[in-house]
Image 1 (spheres, rainbow, N blue to C red):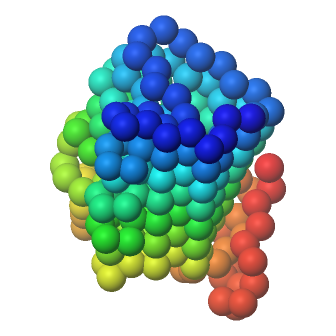
Image 2 (image 1 turned 30 degrees about the vertical axis):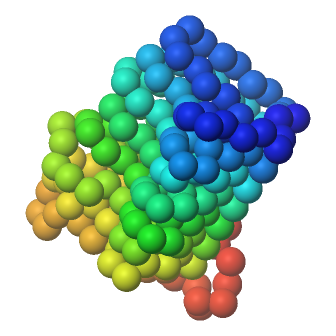
Length: 232
């Protein structure tokens, strides 16, 4: 357990520059980089593997949970990222800047960038993200409550078998993605895409149950009071 730490510079819980780190069955909570980057993690030019961990209630100016840059590769499996906050800038849960991030069977819940963009995720500067069988809910931002990918870059965004629901923002409450390069399979929510680009399947309802995770089909949307569920 890594908790209650404060950094004057980047990385309230971890500052990782180069090399690799592997974390299993861990809790990283209540850490702060209040005026800088990466409340729990600041990762640059490194590889990080995180399995069955909880990253919660961390805070930073940007990247309340994670701030990943510069050829970094991050993988999260069976983990929860919740209640993290970016106090003045982007990326309540994640700020991805030139990094590659992969999440499988993770819950991204209740994070906030209340004064800026990307309550759950903010993907910038050719950052790449792959989310499979993830729940992205109850995140808050001005733009892209669940996920904000603000510009047109060459890297990819994959959403497969994910649930976006109960996120809030003034624009793109679940997803704001003007980039033309994306793939969405068996994923539903409410979002903004660059028209006519990418591979788009089963997006457009808030609250859903994927029939089969990666087969490109969705069942009808349940009522707004029902909680989405995933077959993991």
